[in-house]
Image 1 (spheres, rainbow, N blue to C red):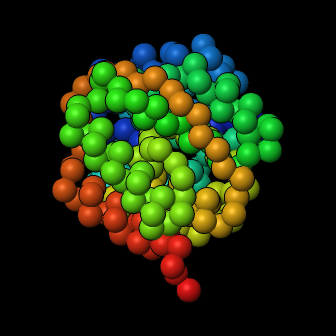
Image 2 (cartoon, rainbow, N blue to C red):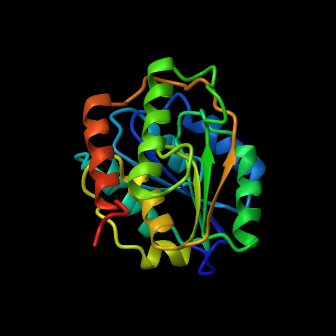
Length: 225
């Protein structure tokens, strides 16, 4: 391994993404060829093998411990000065990563890539309404004015993640990784992105995800003493 840390790391948590990972990594190599790609995988298919063949740093989480612990492992494994999180289902525009990195260079500690400038054609109406509602609750409960608390695409300054205390256990970790920095006074911003139809089968668990979203938001409520 190169002893010089990369400037950018891209972290992806994967679960049976064999149909998408080659396309996603190929786009990453084209748009940010210098980036380290870290994959934390709990698949029963060939996702991990494909990722290794493509030169990714692969961490296996077998048996699966859940999305939160997997994301935590990815964030703590990544060596980059700027860490970008990305879903590996081809829904997010990788070409937006340079814009996000530019925002970090401007002095921001966190850049959230929001899918919700309007309703994306690739997002079902129930999912859109749920995400819209979560954003309004985050504004009311936490005083955080953002439009998409569940975006799978973010850019973080490494020093933020090293200082941030969060609970990786349980679902909806991206909610806490967004709301906590805002509440703690870090310099955060949001850009709007397009959102595409996913490759593969969704792994969303709506009821459990909703419960955990409220838990994360309640933890960072502005009324907290």
